[in-house]
Picture (cartoon, helix red, strand yellow):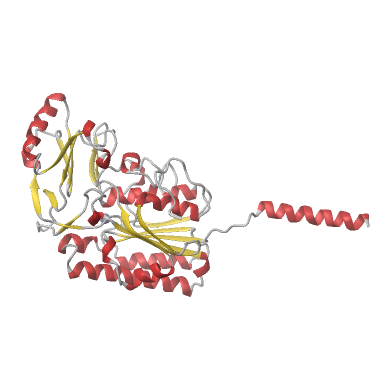
Length: 391
Ligand SMILES: [Zn+2]
């Protein structure tokens, strides 16, 4: 009898040991986060790929971007869960005044002041795969994604899609696959958000989603995969151009004027130059918003660091600052970058698959995406993240 008891105790001990070493993992094996650039919240109605995801899962009707609603600051916010005042990418073009380093659609992750998703999950021992995501090149404090494909001008949406599917087929699958797609941004800028070309680009993005859903099925991964679809901002029709740069007397490097569509950061060297620039911007007060750094309202603040201009000028919705033209000097028909409270700047967010509830939310912000992904991967939220998990 004693012998049987001893065996039972030993068995119980090993069962408990096994359970504590392998706690039940209710997390999905793979989370895909795909960003389709420039797709506006109201453009995906009845577009098949998007409606398939919506029918199966979760949708935010209007996904607010951040200020400025530009590709680089917004993708940095999606990746880090923080606002530009914290992640430091204050525009798509800016100056770091202290170091005189210039940022212009830079690719290196080291520009980020807060850690991106791939770093947060690699630190926990999970694997990430990142393709063409803005600001994902190189290491962030020594940490790289496990699998990586850099952005290049020649990279097509079809090639990015193939790379995502290759990641899904890997034997040693990544826990997180992040990929950026051209989406409808180019067509939106060139032809405007109401054009057939813009809608065709949205349809093409829908087809990519359809094929990726099919690939998940072929791999028999439906029960172990969550698919998250996002965009960085919407698109507004361009009405007129405002000439800001030629008003500011330019001596040498300073005053430095950094223009990104409807947003201009202006940096000065000394108090004398400050007063000259202040005077030269006065006639623009009726044409656009102009703030001195210390008076920028909460809605437009990008922080009190050397990356934010001494002056910030913002166009009214529909206007853009010159010079902002395509290489062929064509006037663009669509633009973004305006306040995220402008409905035309809202993007999309949809999700389906393992761990995703069947529900809808009227509004959320792109900073909520990062904490959602972390929660899905079983990582407790980092207190330095501005957003909140969506489910
Ligand atoms: Zn964009």
